[in-house]
Image 1 (spheres, rainbow, N blue to C red):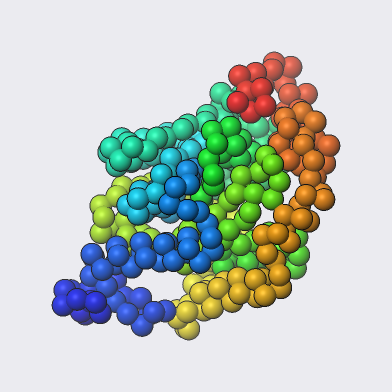
Image 2: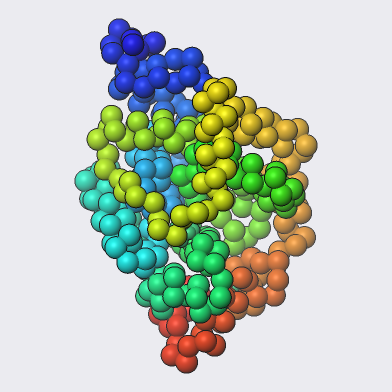
Length: 322
Ligand code: Q46
Ligand code: ZN
């Protein structure tokens, strides 16, 4: 199999694009797709400061690498969840990438430890507040990413969600007609109100397979194992269903998600529209000041409940999550 761009041997076949690429042409294709995503969705400008949320997995580390390669000012935030060996290994992968690839290009890594900031690991916290681990984890990660982006004056926060992630999430939202989530699902969410950082997903045009191939050809090491808490999640089932459809009919995931983005744009889900509706609903949390639809935000409610369960003070190093 030959590369469709040059005479070299191809390393990856892409049925949804009816093409195949050698290693250098694959890297160029991946970077072009990211640049196209950034421009078409007005994600950020070349002078903007970007905060990438990294986990040690392939998507977030490749996103950091691609943005640095494209010449953007991209720092990263790693949230150490305190999940035993998994967190130790993921932190090692992030540190190794930062030391060998990011810092030499002038980028920095910020680390937030949940055991220090919130006073216990994510599993222990979730048990204290009697919530599923992933739900407590989502609240803490959203809160800390937003806090760091705002406190450190980043223009935008970027996550490594890819086409597979977004198509699976869309399928879940459609199956349960989650109107509120459907309205807020998109590759570029505006800051809407003071205190909320802009959030973007520059990998939405690329599949997991393409990103994994980029990591291999560029010899970038990442943590292959998934978080142990992810086992049995519905998102994995939706991904499996979509992968089977994709095998039968290449391009299904792309048509499903990109079609949704087009329809969303046509339905006037513009930045201004969303910002106006958010502004009418949000007010500063009475405890920490981050925007919320209730008097006290979900992070502060969760931490207050955890503290009631344990007489010793949880999160004492972490007034307002700091
Ligand atoms: S990290 Fe957190 Fe995921 Fe692990 S505990 Fe669940 S939500 S599975 S993206
Ligand atoms: Zn709060």
